[in-house]
Length: 296
Image (tube, rainbow, N blue to C red):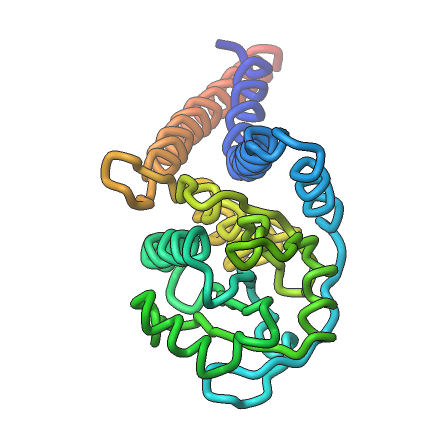
């Protein structure tokens, strides 16, 4: 192997190792976005024009900022939406007298909650369940609903009430659709994910859904950074972003160590390459000296 080939080999290996995290980050984002798009496309809302319009309205608010609204928590205290920003936020609208889907959605979120915190870290996101039946969803009713669903006291999960004006503003902001019906209300089963700056990131639909549909967008927000190598913390987040993988057989997220194996192999190759390069340089230097002596 000549010197030029060695240099090309080393340049290729170094480039591959440095790009590994960047490519993995892009792959993780692409996979997460594809998952969300497939989820939206597969919803049964296309059965009627009204349901299709509800889905389109919900999708149209993605990328828009939610205003700072005032609510009351289950204890009757006034809270503002801005208090819950700074990290990803899940908003789920329900009504407490719902006899069908609301309880199922809440139970699904509860089932996903532990898995999400296990993958992303305790306190990595917040969830708000808000009653849209403003006449009846009082703080005491919301507190009773949380107790009935077995989720009272879940860390970072709050149950809120609002007046008519506040509820309508939130409904408009998150693209939620509901209307009165003989059973109470018909409504879109929807969870809205908002980033730390208050901008709507994605929508999750349905009473039941696969856990990654909710956790993957949260993972991208928790571990995502704009500059992969700006700091060690950014680098660690990038590694966690695409090395934390959902294992359906275990129903949990696990850390995939194959990245470090690839880096270790790359490091060994680089070390071997530098060793060979150093030997080649020393040999070339010796030959040059011998030729100079012979010429003299």
